[in-house]
Length: 113
Length: 110
Image (cartoon, rainbow over all chains, first blue to last red):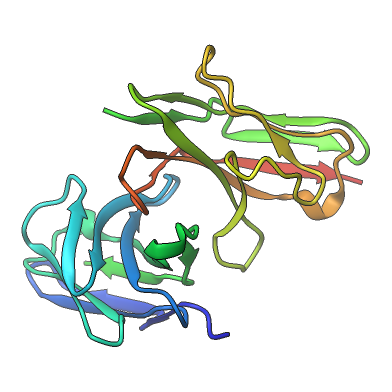
């Protein structure tokens, strides 16, 4: 069983740039959720994808967007990066049909300078 | 709005002592509560969920709807329990959309 993998592990970007983070879900999982974890805080829900459509969104602006592909992998895109976007971005996959709990990846550490 | 509060940022105990990590929540409906754990250099992983009503690694947690709490307990702490612990809530039909607390760092001293 392959777990959730995220790439890249670390990334440094400049304010105003755009970034794409990638996530491969665990085998058999059809739902992907993205979380932002600022330093010293718990993860915050960004959005979730199921059957290639956004299925719920947290309190994040539209410059945070995503995609889910037919193989259930997913991308998180952030436009017009701001300094406050510096955080650990976590991807979690799950199987909606069996109400399985979330399985998290190791995260991508994004630094915006 | 839903909210999860973990009042202790840091908690230190000695090996063999009982440990309780506190979690209080705010939610108007019927929530599902979880405890996630992150050991050093490892990914965030599920420790237990209240609907399973099971004990994992000696930890238990009971949902108290009257006090809106879901405290995590273990009667005899072990050094390998040292980790960051997060309490999380999922509300109603919000499958997979968790609200996390800020976390508690547990340190078990030998």
